[in-house]
Structure formats: structure tokens, C-alpha cells
Length: 197
Image (cartoon, rainbow, N blue to C red; front, side, top):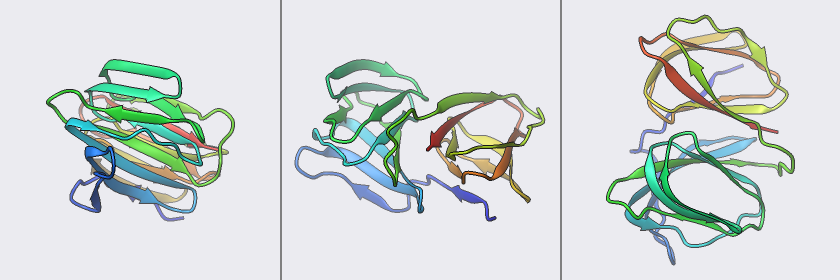
């Protein structure tokens, strides 16, 4: 089985989202496979998204700290949001976001290719430097990404790599694969984990 790793380098596949009501939002497609699409949204200063819906569930994970104004159905929020904050927008629910500040912030949006009516397992996992990882196997597809730059050793089944990852680099682990992640850097790193049923 091949390792499925995608970088979020903002130079590739950037698309401005300046349609009606969308101003200053840029998207970068990070991963698109049979199970999931992952897109990085960059909200520039003063940017906003128009209210919209999707015919499928989307999982929105704050990647960088930022001042956010947003709505998801009847739930509205405004304030400083830290990396790792998760919002789930279900099919047909109106949602939107805006950046009222003078600093960019980024969001990763995970869109499963099939409907996920139940719970979506998410977790922030802290990895201390050089702590050996125990291989595990999931019954769901898994999207992993560090919330800061990191040097990680990754094993998926019998394939092993050691690489430097930027914040938001996406690692896809298909359901049924045995995987392990080890922080081989010198500082602790937090990795966001999202299960896609």
C-alpha cells in the first residue's frame, strides 16, 4: 500500500473564492481521493464567505489562530479561535465564516465522499520527541495533520518514511491499514486526527 501524503504548499492549485458574497478567501485543494476531499481555506484580512450549504457533511478544522466570525445553523460565534477547533456542518445547514481582523488565518475543510450521519471522531494528539509509537488500525479512513511544523516518522502497513511536514500537511490513512506516527523532531508536536466513517 502506498503512503498517501499531501502537502499544503500554497503555491499549488490556489483558487480565489470571490463569487457573489465571497471576498478575499483563497482555497488550495490538498487531497482528493475516492474517500475524501481536503481543502485549505485562507481567509485574508476583512475576507468573508457567503452563507451557503452543502449536500454532504463537512468538517472544518482551524489550522492557524485567528479572529473568526461564523455561523453554523443557529449557532453563531465571534472571537479568537485556536488551532484544532472543530466545527461540523451537516447537509443543508447554512454556514459561513469571515475574518474581521488584519491578519490571515487558515482552515482545513474535510469533505467525505459519502454521507456520515453518525459521530465524526476527532482528536488532538500530542507527540513528545522520540517517543515510540504503537501501530494501530482503524475501521474508518483517517486524516492526520500536524498543527505546527514537524519532523515525523510515518509507517503505513509495511511502508516507512521520515519527513518534515509543514502545519496542515495532510496524511491519509485508509481504513484497515496499520499505521504509526512518531515525532522524530526535538520539540513536542500536536497532530489533529479526523476519522471519516
